[in-house]
Amino acid sequence: MYYSDEDTEQFLRGKATKPNGKKSASHYLYALVSRERENLDIINTTVDETEVIKLYPQFTVGKRIDFSGQVSFSSFISIGEKRNKTADNRLKLKSLMDAIDNAIASDFALDMRRFKISDDKTDEYSFSVILKTEVDCYYNDDVLPGENYKGIFRATCIIINVSRSEWGRLDGKYDFEGIKYFKYEEVLKAQNGRFKGLCKIAEIDPRDKIGAFFIPVRVTSKEFPYDRIPAGGFCIQGVNVDFNKGRVKLKSMNTSQKERHFGSGIG
Image 1 (tube, rainbow, N blue to C red):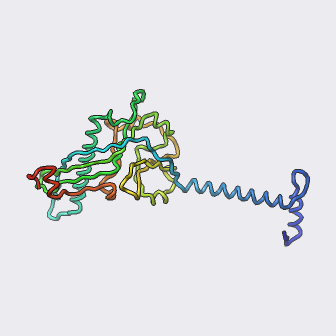
Image 2 (cartoon, rainbow, N blue to C red):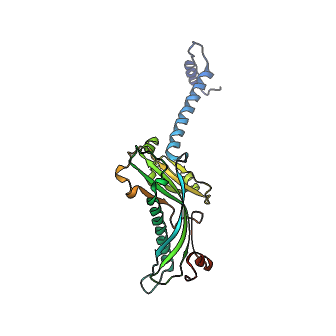
């Protein structure tokens, strides 16, 4: 090495003593560089842990169930001189989705044993999450004011049974009460704020290729929510009228569909 001043060279020679008593300037310089790299790695690791969301292995402890049947829901007419067709249509579709939720809840409540994933009778405290992942519904919208709309629906759902043992197995960090849908590009931009990671819920060949449902993984553990077990022992989460067409398809029936499902007297 070239030294611009003699004092620096003398300082290096004084620090270059190895444990065996021999002197090696290159050994001393290598040790300095190694320590600097270690410090840099620590800094980079700290930055990564605070800014990057961790992706956990897919959650596969769920049971896919398809619900289907007929629904009937109220027709709404705007009050006042001016009609807002967009608002009317949105209100109609929200009422339709509520009717679908009610139909799913009724079917689930009638035969909960069939939908349970586990028969662990030692675990009396548990609740189920009915996660709607896809909904298709064709409905008859040719009705008179005050009459009910009628429709035929099919909802693909994943049933997640959250028992105390399952809660404990995951260290109380999986937020089953706050399952969220994320587009994949949103996951890449996610910041580590309220939770430290996301666990994708496994689906069988979903139509939607741009996003998925994730369970947020908290930084700290929480106790099993004994005081928040929903009425009936289950809650419905998942898609609503704002989801993309890959997840939700709500369409009015054509004439042949009306006749096939409800007879020629309708429409």
